[in-house]
Length: 512
Image (cartoon, rainbow, N blue to C red; front, top):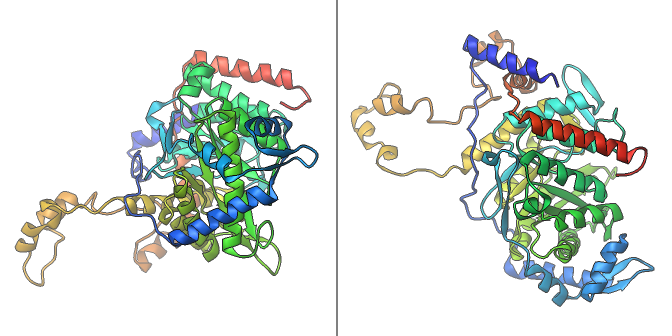
């Protein structure tokens, strides 16, 4: 995290005239194509009805006295002994009336404002792995230096529009206060929006307060103009952890976005059939979404989906499978059924940044795009089923994301694009290389890759015969030399540092 050194390195590279890693440039990405419909309207309604049956007859366990109180006061059936809540269809429908169809998150740099919903699509850095890997240093436990490098890469690449919740766990720091260090890194090394930890009220509130300091806002102003979101992972089947529920309610009470995401692995935490898994996922997601609206009507909320399958021979999770891809598309249909923004994920079970990692990720990424995902979580750097944040996989994923963004750019059809003048000038059997139409457009006509190598075999061999994973190592290292830390007012940085030190003292050996 030697920030001044990185700035000087970037300045020296520019002075030498070295070519920078090609990017598509900062943009708000839209998905202009109609969403794919894997399920008919009747099938969507059948899943909806099955979900309501689960909520009305089986109930959901909620391990939070405060959450149980909210449901009871609103008129839901609550059994405090079993901590179970049952919701009738009218209760669910009433809560859904206040959910926003779309919303925006504004970080400390308003130019990096993120729009969630509609036809917008956003890609985040991987979040949560306990381990880190790169080809030079190997697999190791997460640490703060790697954390800083990975969020710096996310800042550097324009196609990563948000950070997830802790790109890796810095295990050398105390578990009860490390969220303060990671929030500070997010706010100082980047100026993009990020996900906060929702493990309890304290961690969520620290994230909101620190972003408020960075923006110069009060908590009331933050509630009116949110900056942050969090992922609530449901303990499927049908259980909401108490600490997660507290974090969720805290975020909603302060007007920040919540993404409710059941983790439904078919054959393990959900039925082995896709329809049954989707019904369970939908019931769990709806339950959490209702709770956000009880905490604060109108609070921004995202329909989250993470349905995949296990390897039935070993029980190990699998990602990027045909079933996972179909679930990504079908879940988008369910989210649109309730007029909610949609979160999905392009995962992979590969233990290496290899061909398996690429094809599984791309398979799931297509599902996310065809399903009109608005928030594509864990989009860059996910490896080993989410247990490792990989530097090389990050580069491979950025390449795939940029490919997808280029694909989502609509085809222009106008006089210049139809090229009739050029077609008239070039004789039969000729070529277009030297035509003015080509020369005017040659540098911008096609997507320029950062990782793909289009040399012929001889040229590739002469350049070292590096495969994609080996080339990715050079790219992430180059990106770190190009990275520039976004400026921050010294007074704001001082206030953030003071907040972190004060909170660490308050937390001590306890929980935040």
